[in-house]
Image (cartoon, rainbow, N blue to C red; front, top):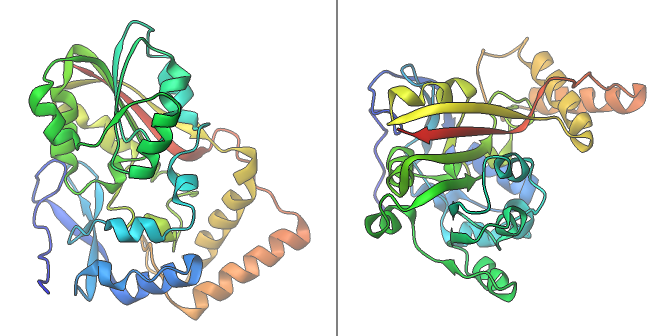
Length: 315
C-alpha cells in the first residue's frame, strides 16, 4: 500500500508557508472513532502511521496532511448517516434563503435529499449529490438530482447560475481550491456563492478530541479569518461572514467543551486538538460531573455556534 506524502503547500491558497501544529498517530484517531462511534477507520489511513495537523500562515486554513478523504465504505459505516448530513432545519438554509430570489437559477452542491430546494422554492433548481440513497429519497419528492462532482459539472455549465450553495461539504473536500474555482466557474458575473461549514472558531466544533472533526471525515477546519481573506485568493467580493448562534440544545455541550479545554490546556501544549491520554479523559469526566451536580451553564449569548456561513459575489 502506497504511503501518501505530506503536503508541502496549502491546499487552498497554494502557499508554502505551512507550520505543523500537531503530529497525530493514526491509531489514536482510530481509538476515538471506535470508542465514540464503534467504527474502525484504520484502513482509511492507507498505511500512514501518522498525520500532521497543519496551519497555513498565509490564509489561516487548517488541514490534515497527507490528505485522506473517507471512502464510501466509511460513510456507510456511520450510524444513520442521513441524520448527520441531511437535516432539514439547518440554520444556514434559512440564512441563505434571504439572498435568493424566486427567479434565480440556483445550484446546490451536496443536496442530500433536497430539503434546501423545498425551503427556497425557486423556479430553477439544480442539485448535485453523490449519495445514492439521498438521490432516491429526493426522487420520491419529485426532485431530480445529478450524481456528478462540481469539477466535472462546471465544464459544461460555465456562467450559468445566479446562486451556488454548498452546505457542510467543503470540510470534506480533498482539493478545496479547485472545488471553489469550479463553483465560481458556473456562476454568472455578479452571482452569489454561499458556503456553510463547521466553525473552527466555535468550541462546539473545535474542542479537543472532536471525533468527526478528524480524518477520514473532515479534512479541513475553517476560521472566519480564512474566509475574510478569500478576496486575495479568488475572483470574489466578500459580502458577509455569519456565525450561527449557540442553539438551546447545545448549551450544555458548549459549557462542557469550553471548561474541559480550559482546564486541560493548563497541563498541555497550546493549540493541540488531540489527546489520547488518561489525564484528558479524567479531566473531561470530572468537568462533566461538576456541570451535572452544580447545574453549571455558561452564558452563550453572542457566542459562535456550530456553523459559519460565508456569502461571496463573483466579480
